[in-house]
Length: 315
Image: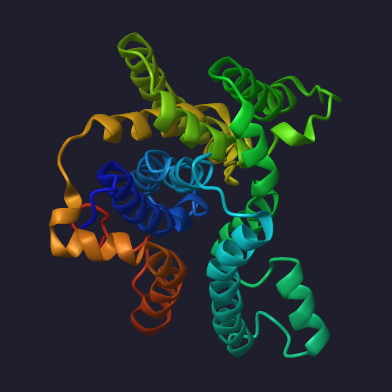
């Protein structure tokens, strides 16, 4: 343990790792609205809804660490150091899951189809995260130039802009069937979470603002849970995950609340060996756990529909 270690980063990484596994364990239930019991579906919906913050937290942690203006690596050195830490896992795990999918006859064993699946991020559902991380890493040297000269007010403006053009415009499009044709590409996607993590780490929030965020997070949780049910019913039982999307308003508020909660949470989970191990292997756990789920399903018929999430007893 070094003196420079920020243990709330580790705490967030640990709980986010648990949450992403739980999220993916519960997710299959949501697509069985018409074939599982109401209790089963609502259990999956609640677990999935309350863990939507996990992936944004990973992006926010990366931003808090990598946008630090004190880190002054030259662009090519920075890219080489960071990209190598993602490219190697992407190539290795893509190869692994390609073999899995070819054996399952999901992907055709043909050089063109394999290459196409790799470049189109169509190998396995969770690998998208690495593609997004690589894209952001490529632009980070440019973002750091902005960070070096940006004031707190300027960052607040940028974060508000990201929220409006990504989350608010999405809401308007979904529920009012109006597409706002104002393209602000630099303020869309997951880059906003990078800046959000950096902002919260460097500047924090006032006590009043934190209370407001916690209240918004409670409301957001209810909106995600109930809203997902209502949209799915309106969609004739076919799952509608609009409120689940990581860039939509409720998830943004929920993610901020979790981040600031652990900023003030003074207990260091990393002092325990198991949690410390999870912290160090979080990326590996993220990349491996879908295969574990697949093995349990195909070899033992164990899946989210057949076990109680809270007791692990069969229905």
